[in-house]
Amino acid sequence: AKEQGRNTFRFYSENLTRKAFQNVLIDSALREAKSRNEFRLAFQPQIDIASNTFLGLEVLLRWHHPTLGTVSPAQFIPQAERTGLIQDIGHWVLEQACIAGCKWLAEGLPFGRLAVNVSAPQFRADDFVDQVQQVLAQTGFPPSRLELELTESVLVHDTDQLIDSMNELRGLGVQFAIDDFGTGYSSLSYLKKMPIDRLKLDKSFVDNINTDDSDRIIAGAVVALGQAMGLEVIAEGIEHEDQASALRDLGCTQFQGFLYGMPMYTSRIEAVLRKEAQR
Ligand code: C2E
Ligand code: CA
Ligand code: CA
Ligand code: CA
Image (cartoon, rainbow, N blue to C red; front, side, top):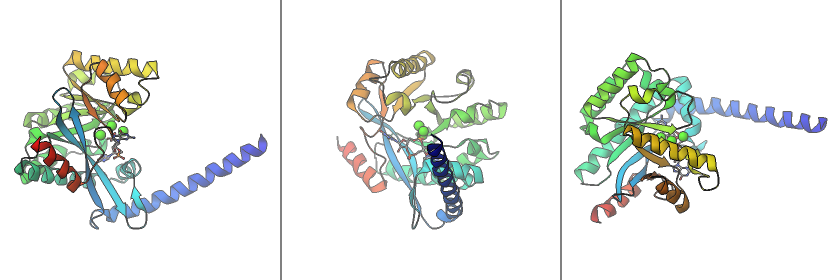
């Protein structure tokens, strides 16, 4: 047991060192990524099975580095948040998304809304509302086509300033979704103070919805909460038909996941949207 303990420790510390080293590499590469055109946007369909239409597309950032390869946003976004680079990256994502959206509107492609992820430090920046307004004005993208996905970590500090910012954007027509709903630590009281349109039921409750009673109970409670409060509920991470059917039985009609479409780069999603337009 002692031997094993030592081995485990060695393995753990090597892992840590490698990870720390990799983080340093990523930090410096990330600083250059935008100017070197290493970022791209991917778009993943969100569908409404009641009307069988595209509700929207979630905008997901992709980073391909020449030597580090493809780095997952789950890895580089938290780092960009720590270093502050998220401000610049987040602005770029919003701008590029709106530019793409304008082009699709001009072509009559039925994408619904664009749902853009916004990090907590990004939303808390003093000039965030101005930034969004500026991008909307410069690109001409209609605010009513924009949805911002916030995690509960943004909402835990429910300051007046935060609520004012949300109300100002909501006044323009921008919508808000709560991402990863059910995984945060905050109280639910923010739901009555803030202009929220949609809850995104986290994938972790969807994965085992047919085998885990508590997951199904929680999913049902989120759907019921949404209905009671007049909020829409979209389930994310749907991979299998039996997950969709369990969620349908609970009253959920909005879905996102590999079952309905992978995140796709521009040319691919455009082809999907053109086909959808001809339907
Ligand atoms: P998220 O916002 O919860 O996004 C959903 C993630 O689940 C995406 O991973 C998506 O590709 C993946 N996904 C969607 N459907 C399925 C499915 O059926 N099965 C499985 N296994 N996965 C599915 P991705 O693109 O790797 O993004 C990871 C996280 O990185 C996102 O989680 C979000 O928190 C963050 N992120 C991505 N792009 C941006 C961005 O532009 N800005 C910010 N602030 N964060 C971003
Ligand atoms: Ca999201
Ligand atoms: Ca999510
Ligand atoms: Ca997530």
